[in-house]
Structures are given as C-alpha cells and as structure tokens.
Image (cartoon, rainbow, N blue to C red; front, side):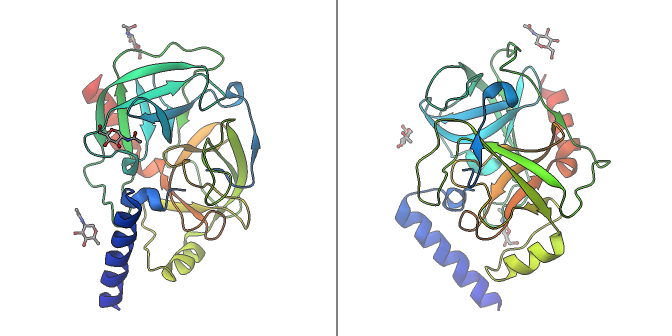
Length: 255
Ligand SMILES: *[C@@H]1O[C@H](CO)[C@@H](O)[C@H](O)[C@H]1NC(C)=O
Ligand SMILES: *[C@@H]1O[C@H](CO)[C@@H](O)[C@H](O)[C@H]1NC(C)=O
Ligand SMILES: *[C@@H]1O[C@H](CO)[C@@H](O)[C@H](O)[C@H]1NC(C)=O
C-alpha cells in the first residue's frame, strides 16, 4: 500500500513534468455547470495574473490591502499582479501590483494541505460597487452536509476547455467529510481537517478556479484547492475557519 502511494505520487509527478505544469495545476479545479454573473454580484472576486498577463487563478478581496488565494497558485520566481472590478477575465477592471506573497508555512504541494496564500498589494484597493471585501467564516459557521454554497470563478467550463471570459458561479452542496474521504481513497488522497468537500455530479469547480472563494450567505467559507476531473469527484476546498488565525495574524504583522 505504502509503495503504491509512492508510485502514484511519482507517476503524478511524471505526468506533471510531461505537461510542463505545476503539480497542483494538473488538478486545478473552472466552474463546471454554472452560469454567467456580473462582478457587482461578487465584487470580492479577483483574478491572479501570471507574469502580469494571463488569468492564472481566482482570488478574493478580504481587506483594502490583502487578497486571499491558494498556495498552489504561486509558482517560484514569477511575477504576479491582481485584477479586480471586472466581470471579464480579459477586459476592464483595475490591475494592482503585489508587494508581498505569503504562502502558508505548512503548505505541502503533495498533500495540498494548508493550501492558502495571503497577498499584500502595493497600494490600497479603491472599493466601489465592483470592488469590495468579503467577510471570512469563523468556527461558528457550520459546514453541514447538503448546505448549498456558491463557487465563483473564470475557470474552464469543461475539463479540457479554456478559461471563461465571463465570470461564472455555481451552487453546490457540501459533502460530508466521511463520504468524501471514501471517494478520495480511490485516488489515494487524504482529506485533512484543513479541507472540506463540495459538489455534485455535473457541477463543480474546474481548471482556473483554484484560489477562488467558496461562499455561504456572502461569507467566504473555502478556497478552491483541488479536484479530480471536473465534476467527477467532489471539489476539495481549504477550510477558511481553520486558517482564520493564520490569516488574521499575517494581516496584523504585515499591515
Ligand atoms: C512567465 O515568465 C517566466 C519567466 O520569465 C516564463 O518562464 C514563463 O513561461 C512565463 N509564463 C507565462 C504563462 O507566460
Ligand atoms: C508532504 O507530505 C508528505 C506526505 O505526508 C510527506 O512525506 C512530505 O515530507 C511532506 N513534504 C513537506 C515539504 O513537508
Ligand atoms: C489603507 O486602508 C487602511 C484600512 O485598512 C487605512 O487604515 C489606511 O489609511 C489606508 N492607506 C492609505 C494610504 O489610504
């Protein structure tokens, strides 16, 4: 069993190298089965741009000066910018320069554990109807099975599709960690207490949605982390409530 796990990890690594992608982006989880929305309906939505050009990951505005995304969205030695205030991935909005990138110290790219990253911008955001922060969930927000949550992003709308230019959103149910663990056992991937699962057949997040927010009643409860084939296994999300002390500490230290 242990040998198999190692072999699968090595095999996944080889596929990753063959595709020239970072480990997590292979399993990057675009909105699958969702619908168009406008930025005014999700003004906390940001696009993390790689090399200052292309949409690479989703992100959320959580403070005038800070954006939240997934740690696996950060590749070494690349330049990132953050685009906000637009419905369209490739048009409009404002672009902000990044001052500092803080990946969680415990982030593990093999297990996807602690998949969270705080980004400090060089200047404050200007809030408007199209740019605003979202509140983060603490432990009082219960993620019970079958509660409906929203995932938002510019990710692919099919498993091997391009990113979507118009912002998408899909409503999906929370899946119990027990049944999610059983499903992920088949692909030998652990669901830790920093993770939770959501999705249903045909509705999911997909390539390019990583780093984006999962929300419940306009509170962010998750960060899109990984999946296995869009709409096949439930999507896995970093649990905001488990990361909240780390997020608050790092904002305070870096204000
Ligand atoms: C970004 O820049 C790096 C370093 O200059 C380059 O290797 C990489 O191919 C670029 N990536 C994209 C998506 O343009
Ligand atoms: C990541 O987790 C794996 C599996 O638990 C472990 O073997 C590995 O050492 C960890 N890597 C890092 C960098 O902590
Ligand atoms: C940036 O926003 C913070 C509130 O989070 C405020 O205290 C600070 O004065 C602002 N800085 C500038 C330069 O506007």
